[in-house]
Every structure is written in structure tokens, then in C-alpha cells.
Length: 353
Ligand code: CO
Ligand code: CO
Image 1: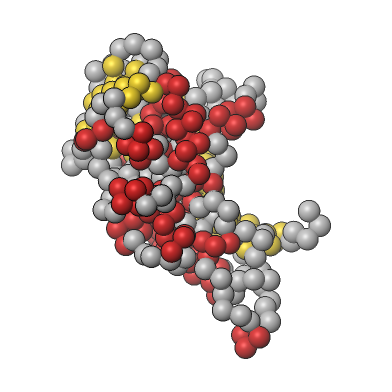
Image 2 (image 1 turned 30 degrees about the horizontal axis):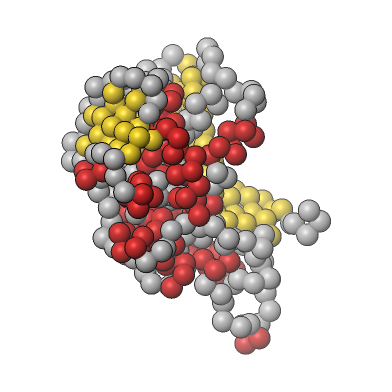
């Protein structure tokens, strides 16, 4: 990787300027739209779930005495106990542009990275930037806007943002490595679901198809941007207050993919009431017009053998839609958010009706 230059950011917020040089503005063609530089977008560019599980199979990271959440169920973040009443939460998340606006992309990527801390019941404490930037193609000012968006999301979360790492990369990428803190006695895990618990979803679905249309046409979907930028902090705190012990966040594997991981880890089944699942405005129209990310189809291929569906194939595709910075899926009721199904006794099968 001879043409990759690594550089370290100086520590401390606000987001630092990048030591990147570019030709004079007059000689530059108009900058390409950010989303056109990415093969996949947002969490839809995740490695497909089945493939990822093959890659990490047999690797270390089993949970034990002090490693409270390890690798075995593919939880959202790793959690290690540091003393009786405190645990450290660690996660990293980055992806290619989901929207053309660099500031919005930065906010979304940062909210998404911190979401994995909220998904295990923690609070983000400290984050560092991860940035891949095509320095020959894009203006450094645009990179600054991305970092500014990330810094604003961290400020909203009360999470320090200090430094990070950047590389010269033909495909732009941005995200955070986040360290959080949690109460080891009050974690949200994939494996602690029980039959009889309702399933609550805290953000509507549909950002996968809406982002796919945005990438193809440039149309902006404000509601989708607002949803992706929103922190899962309040939902996580409300889930803990209501006594929940099992949750995950719905991202690239879609509602069905993340629910499948949850029921498989918990050793039970689930019922999803398709009509109770909320969608962003325009999601169904995008699907009907054929704007479906490849990731959503791969999700459905992966989870399909474990789904018993009494709904149309299109409905399943929406339920498997690859989300970016989606909401929490909680086993339990969370006031103010819709119940979309329940956990049931039996093998890990998802019945959609
Ligand atoms: Co997650
Ligand atoms: Co994640």
C-alpha cells in the first residue's frame, strides 16, 4: 500500500484541519457528488453478515470473567469490567458517504458509531476520528466539514472528540472509534431476550431505499437525514429505565438481520407484525421505483431461511432494508416508541405476519 500516507491528528477538539495540499481552485473541475465516489453507501457497505461470520469464526474474544461482552454473538460493542461498578465499552464504526452533504455525512457517521455504545447500555465518553480521504479529488475544506459534523454529534452526546487517524483513500470513509462507560450490572445484550417480551423499534425504517435514491438522483430526504443524525441516547436510557436487558441497534443487516442475530443468541423465536413497523415517508415509493441497496437483498438472502413469512416479498425486502444509523430494537417496552412484535418460545425463527 505504497501510496497510502498515514498521519496523526493533533489531540483535542475542535476538528483539526488536514495537512492536505490541492491545486488552485481555478484549475479544479466541479467537485464530484460525495455519494458517487462510493461503491456502497453507509451501513449498506458492510461486509455481508454470512461472509463476516466466516471471517471471524474461531477468533479469540470469548467473554469470561472481566470481558463481559466478547465476540461470540456479534454484539454491538465489546465490554470489559474495570472494577466492581464500572465497565469500559469499546467500538469502532466507519463507512462511505450516505449523503452528498459533507457536514450531514459527518454527523450521521458519528451518531452511528456512538450508537453501538448506546446499544449495549453505555454512554460514550471519548471518541477519535477515522478518515479516509481522496486528497487528489476532493477539497480539504470538505473534509473539514465532515469532521465538523462528527464533532457536533459528539458535542451533542457529551462525548469528547480528540484526534484520530487519516489516510489518502480513493473512496472517502469516515467514522469514529468510541470508548464508553457502562454499569456492568445493567447492560443491553443480544443474548438476554426471553419469550413473551414485546419488541420495540425506536426509529422508523426506510433510510436504505431513500439513501439509494439520493445516491442515484441527488434528491434530498430531510426526514431521513434527521433520523440518521439522531442519537440513540434517549432510547437507550429509556430502555434501561424500563428494565430492559436485551437490545441491539438496527443498521446494515436490516431489522430482520439484526433480529435474527438477537433470537439466535437468545435461543427463542420472534413474531414481527409487519403493519406495526414504522417507515419514513417515501420509503415504499422508493422500493416500488426499484431503489433497493444491494445490501438489503444480501440481508434477505442471509436471513430468509430463518423467516416464516405471510407477507409479500416486497414487504420482506423493506423489513431487511439496510439501515444506516438506525434505531434500537429493544426486547421490552420503551415508552413513546412502537411495539413491532414479540419474542416467542421455540426455535430461532422469525414469523412475519
Ligand atoms: Co450495532
Ligand atoms: Co456498528
